[in-house]
Image (cartoon, rainbow, N blue to C red):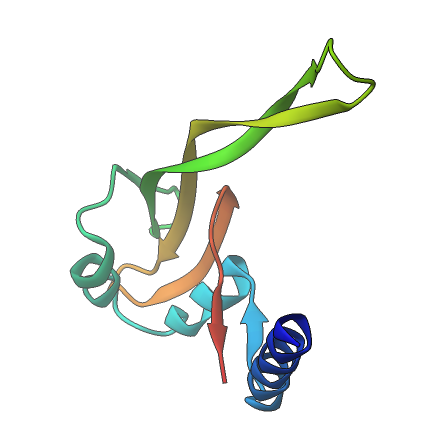
Length: 127
C-alpha cells in the first residue's frame, strides 16, 4: 500500500513538471540574448572582466571567468562481505571545481557583436 501511494505521488509530480513546458537552454545559446546590448550591461551582471584586449579591427574582446565548486560522484569503491557472498560498492564523492570562460566582442561604442562560452558553463531551465 505504501509503495503504490509513493508511486502515485511521484507520477503526479513528474506529470506536473512535464506539463509546465520547461525547456533547457544551453549556456552558449542563453548568453546570445546580450548581442546588441552595451558591454556595460554585461559588466553590471557578471562583474569586471578578467581580461580586455583591443583588437586591430577597433573592437574590444572581453574575457569573463566564473568558477564554482560542487560535490559530485567521482567513482566507487568495491567492497565485499567476507562472511557472505554479497558484493557491494560505495560511491565516492569529491569537490569538483568547474570553470566557465565567456568571450565577448564589442564594437568601439561598446555594442556587443558576439559572445561565446567554453568549459563547464551551466545553462538554465525556462518556460
